[in-house]
Length: 129
Picture 1 (spheres, helix red, strand yellow):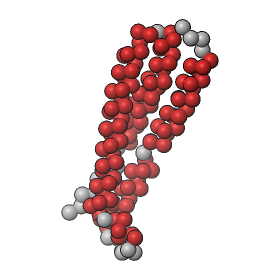
Picture 2: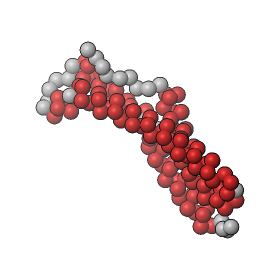
Picture 3: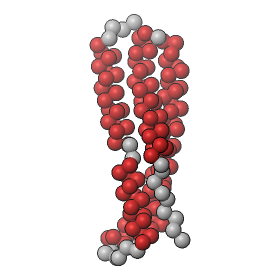
Picture 4: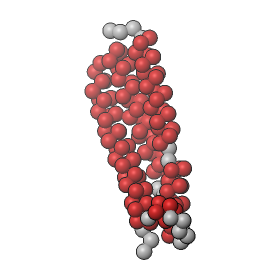
């Protein structure tokens, strides 16, 4: 019985990316809110935390799906041992490769890095209150 999952639809992937990106922006924006609108710090912090909770549970789910596909197909052992891959094995390999290829996680990591640099620069350059 084939239990290899399918890659999630592109809109789901982009929504998760967008939630992660907005959460990242929220955390970095706290620096600005502390200086100019302190009353917004807590709501923005909660938005960031809840957004990250949604984003990281989604990433956890994706990670579990990938690991389950690897374990159920035993694809690592089959490749290591030079075994011929059957159609289910090829489907597992395609799922894993497509899942990584379609993932937006690299852009999320790059955005978090860039937004962190911008937040530090703004904190150092803007006058404090």
